[in-house]
Amino acid sequence: MTGPEMNAPIRKFAAVLAVFVAAAGLTACASSFDTEADLSSPLAPHIQTLVDANRGYPRWEDFPKSLQPAPEPAMLAARVGALSAAGGSLAEEAARIEWTLTGDPTAFAADVQARVDAVEVAPVTQQTQSEIEEFVRRTRERGTAPPPVDRR
Image (cartoon, rainbow, N blue to C red; front, side, top):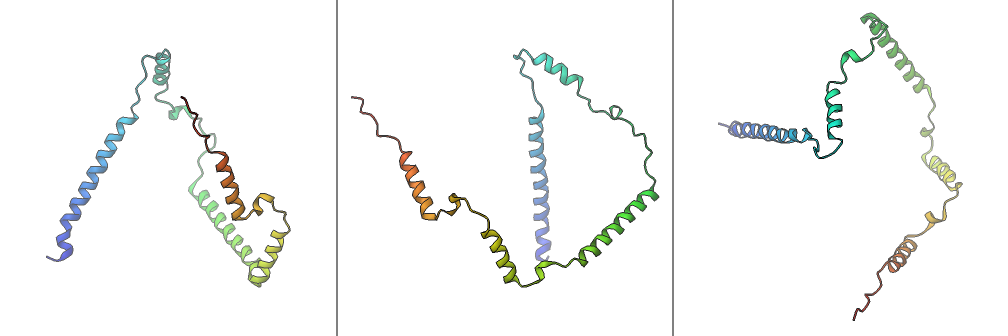
């Protein structure tokens, strides 16, 4: 026997074991969906009555019937063809667009940077890392508990 042939029983055993473990796990989870009512609650009988009355809902009979007949297969094929044609024309229109990203990347980056610089920045976002760490240190100092009171 070759190596893969010798490993075949091990793989089969591992597959059977994995299926068994998965089935056992699902069986264990199934009991968690069986809810039991708290019989000591004054509302328990009313709630159980509502649950029993609506256990079969929704039924197909409860849904409104369609007044229009189902479309014929030829009509569906025509709609699919129209959508495919519309998709093709949209792809052609997109191909005709002159995209602005094909130019000089450094000029594009400079233009974006100029637009970003034109927007005013909140003072909080201009803080440096050291200023933020100093603020955190001061806040932690204020947040420390006072020394314990001598109870003697």
